[in-house]
Image (cartoon, rainbow, N blue to C red; front, side, top):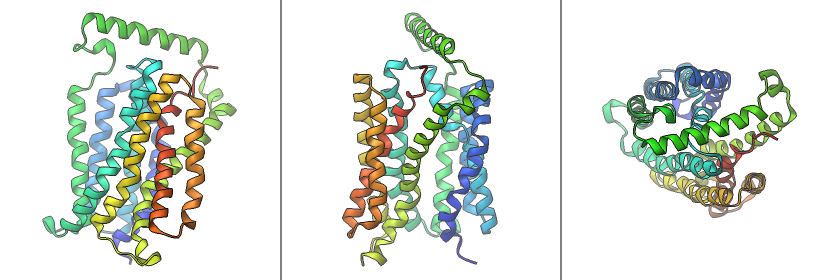
Amino acid sequence: MAPLETLFVPACGLFVVGYLFCGVPGNMALHRFGARRWIARIMVTWGIVASCMAFVPTSGWLYGLRVLLGVAEAGFFPGMLLYLTFWFPRKERVRLTALFLLAIPISSALGSPLSAAVIQFGDGLFGLAGWRVMFLIGGLPAVLLGLMACVHLTDRPACAKWLSSDEGSWLINTMDAEHKETAGRFHWPLRRALTDPRVWGLGMVYFGIVYGLYALSFFLPTIVAGFAETFDTKFSLFQTGLIVAVPFAVGAVAMVFWSRHSDRTGERVWHVAAPTLLGAMSIPAAPYMQAPFAVMVAATVTATGSFPALPVFGCLPRPA
């Protein structure tokens, strides 16, 4: 049997299985149980499952935990986007949503070299292989932050005792007015929402954006590691992590500036279309690059296209 560490790439896609089937129920649960408890539950269970991957004995356990990881995380991302609509007025939402979404590229920019360093230098710690130590340590922050969220997160502005009376009244009135306007103009039953061509069209656009993100997250470390065979270069695990971090760091900066520009101009459609088209052209070009630097430029362009489009996309599904 192949070593477990060689099975991570084929196991990556299994995460989506659990995430796909439990995403909608997860969002419904956030409505029912409240953001504080449900988001805390997601983070704690995700962290526990992620840490448990340090102890998988066989490929079957690895695949099973990958599916379970998707189940644990299901609803977190859309739930957080929904949660932000409880707090931030529409005209400022893209910029503030982008600050939340910065966690994605920043976690990769910092996590890639840190994870590589743990794998390289933590090998043998606790009697575990380096990759097992990485999983064990990686899940613990999510558990701790989940417990903190359970204590400190506030469900709605009406429950925020840390707001002054004037601040609370203004925010509650503003958000209630926006929600009533949206509900009055755009209240569809589930069946209509699932059969409307615009919903399917937006779903395909979102699939394209996320495809670019997953292509980077799942395969860029493997691509950089493959430079040794393709271009006769050699990098340590830590050096590989540093190289992988570059596109995510650039994507983070682009996300901040692009989302601010979208809020300043009030334009949404082309602020999604333009970076998405940029990323769509760079992904198929990457395999034809003839040097490591050129490949990384293509990957950086992909990040610059995918990440800035993500926060703006959330403002597209609005009443006609």
